[in-house]
Amino acid sequence: MLALNAKDLHVQAAQSLKPVADLGRRALWGRGKAVIELDKVSYGYGGQPLFSQLSLTLAPGSFHFLTGPSGAGKTTLLRLCYADLRARGGKVRLFGQDAASLDRDAVAMSRRRIGVVHQDCQFLDHLTIAENIALPLTVSGRSNETDGNLQELLSWVGLADQANQLPPELSGGERQRAALARAVIISPEVIIADEPTGNVDWEMSQRLLSLLIELNKMGKTILIATHDLAMIRSMKSDVSARILRLKDGQIQQAGAEL
Ligand SMILES: Nc1ncnc2c1ncn2[C@@H]1O[C@H](COP(=O)(O)OP(=O)(O)O)[C@@H](O)[C@H]1O
Ligand SMILES: [Mg+2]
Picture 1 (tube, helix red, strand yellow):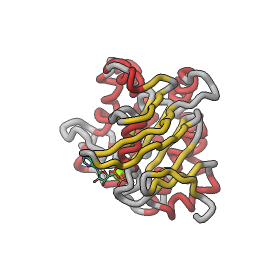
Picture 2: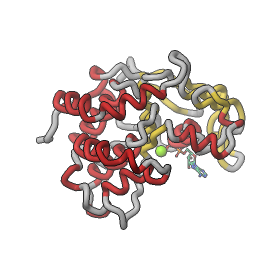
Picture 3: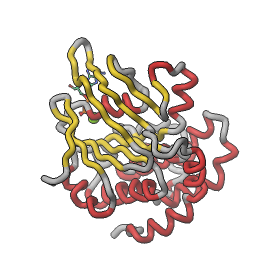
């Protein structure tokens, strides 16, 4: 049995993440505008086009699933969304600014508004889980914000007891939750997660998704890449999410057939 069900989580999340949520809301710029926008973007590796003329708009507070077969370009598309890759053609706008016009500092500033959960969630193995989660604050000179929020965040993702363990001692599901906590600690407005339920069992994937839905209810914009259609199906009634399918270089709306 899970220690928390979705209802408990809702109550707990509402209380424990309030400071985080407030920060996110305060920072939310121009309501109604897209937080991330891909406008006729093209990208490819080594001369091979992966997609061209690809457009995607993430409105503030929206929830998107990005599905598609392995190799379709989901990870690439996410990396374009947080300016880890630069579009070869078309425009990527982050919070209204053309990503191509951003210098290194401006990209770093934008990234602070986007929490990323990477597919392979890497940690620094010589630091504890708590230290790893706090790292984004530490490196941006905001360690003073750590104390209260960190404990609350650890409880929220169900890792209070593992706070002082080292990353290799954690299970796959615990690592995924730690990666989510690390993405959230900077109070981002947007959370981008790449296959966050890739290596975890069914109950754990439900639990992770509940956390992402709670974050969305607090106003965060969420984009999740996943090939796990069963998981999307099970969550469809809990969140008003758009389901996008990436295939053959095109994005299509999916949903009805799920
Ligand atoms: N750094 C890279 N260099 C060359 N090819 C890459 C690189 N990253 C991804 N690819 C290729 O681009 C295609 C899309 O990859 P990816 O975005 O990881 O897809 P997905 O996440 O949907 O599985 C794949 O054919 C992959 O092999
Ligand atoms: Mg991928």
